[in-house]
Length: 176
Image 1 (cartoon, rainbow, N blue to C red):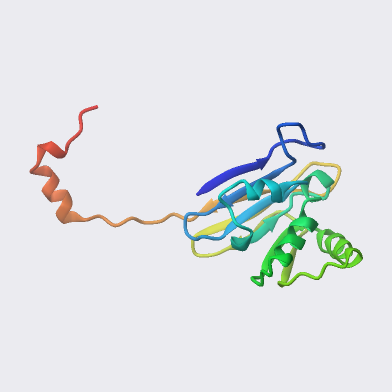
Image 2: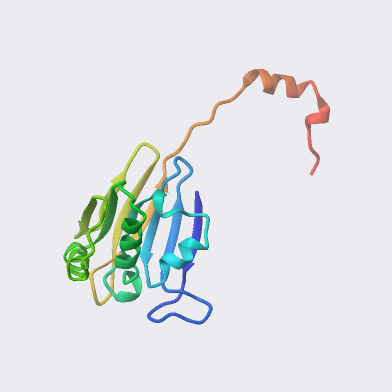
């Protein structure tokens, strides 16, 4: 998997650190996931190798502004680019109402479907053949969740013929 910190500051931005955001691209596909979306996250994405077109899931830990105030702008930019691929947004109860209210009052109308998954308790929130993502409730002054990303075990293939050939060729061995 590939991970890039897009922001590591808390509560307020710092001169050299943006607010909380993390990009994660699993090995199994080209889509990527965003964990939290503080202000200026889309600026950090533009400086990275990640593309808004390949963003498929967003996970918001809690509703303090430094963890999600970048989301309305990011969604609007995605619409201005004419993107139509659906987007899933995971977060604590209230994320859908808060975001839809901002989008409505700002006149934004996303060009893509948004599927909100509101989390109310710890447990599995997403899975496919290659990974699972679970939420774990944290102690905070607002409902707050940590996300646990796990890649499923992948069995490799062994080329028995190549292994047999290695035993006969001492040049293939390395001494450490």
